[in-house]
Image (tube, rainbow, N blue to C red; front, side, top):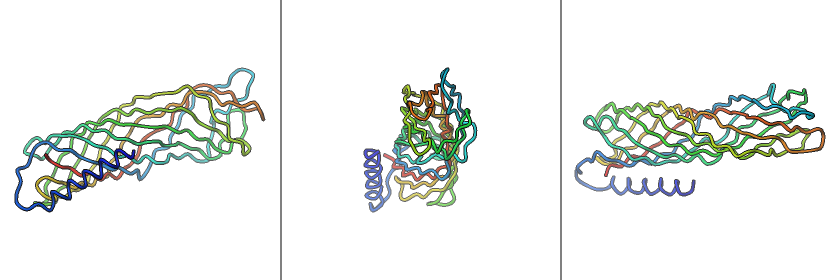
Amino acid sequence: MKFNIFLFSVAIGLAASQSVQAGPKNQSNWFIEARYQGSLYEGNGWKSSEYDTPGSSSSQFQTTSSESRDNLTSTGLSVGYDIFDGNTSISIGYENFGSSTWKTGQFTAKDGRVFDSSEYPMTMHNFMIEMTQFYPIDETKFLIALAGVGQAIIKTTGYAKTFSGVRYAGQVQDRRAENVTKRLGAGMGLNLNPSVQLIGLLQYSDYGKAETVGHVAGTSVGVTYDAGIVETDVNAVEASIRLRYRF
């Protein structure tokens, strides 16, 4: 994450140096783009196929008081090319999301017990191919529409459930999910100079599902030995700020 923030800062520095240069410059069709994306809303759906080991109780979700996902913020870089007189572009990019945790509040288990909460962390990287279409307003301002498809790589390595104030960590099989990413967005941009554009987008991205596989470890208070998979939704409405530099 720190490396991506550094690259984003370098791109801003390049843009600043270009914006103070006098005189026209020939516009290239190639560009590099730095982006920062913050989630405004995160999907929180889930599906559980846990099952209890014979002779034990089951903590499989039946009903939950609340579900939420935190921190789907990302930074990224892309390289692209302008086509059709510069009004359309195609790019290939990489985005690093770091870690994010899906949580529940109090939930009722299959065996009737009421748990305090649960946590399902994950890490995610995303590779995107995007097409953007520009609609000029005047010489400096434009509208923009975006559509993209890619691949999200989501890794899960653990989880926890809290019962009667005691937190029990799950023993899991490391899981790597490779999902198709879908994205649509629209926004507005500014031509800072012939080489640099500042773009703001509101976009919806669906990264698929995180999959957690394993069971809860513990021997006291009849704690569960559940196995199976818990799937949690990974999607968000995002505000994206992008700085595009042509070279």
